[in-house]
Image (cartoon, rainbow, N blue to C red):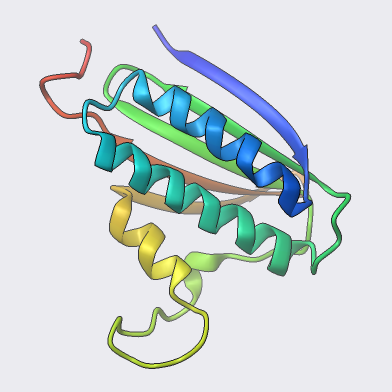
Amino acid sequence: MIDEVEITIASHPRWLRMARSLVEIFCREYQGDAATVRAIVLAVDESLANVMKHAYGGNQSRPIRVICRCDGSEVTIEICDDGREFNPFAQAVPPPDEMRLGGRGIFLISSVMDECEYLREDGWNRIRLIKRLPLSLAVS
């Protein structure tokens, strides 16, 4: 059985809390570890900030879809926007000890999630973040 929930928000920072809450509530159903849930929420928050800044250039009225899905073996979070094409995972990630402003979000997202991918389909950017479930929680 696949569980799925979706929300569409405007690209305004005031809606970030709602998106984070949805992801947290959804992930708590499948992840036994609170620290892992917090890390997933942080990765989603960073991804949403990237959409707002890079894909939409600060335009606060554009749509962002957040889709949470679990298939019994992994949790997948998809973040979709119809903004400027931008693949955050194609950028060189600076080493964590290099001093500079910005650029740490992609490193953080990649460190927290088991898989991260970017797709461009039918005019939509789609960031897919995957976290495998612990064996003790996975459902066959």
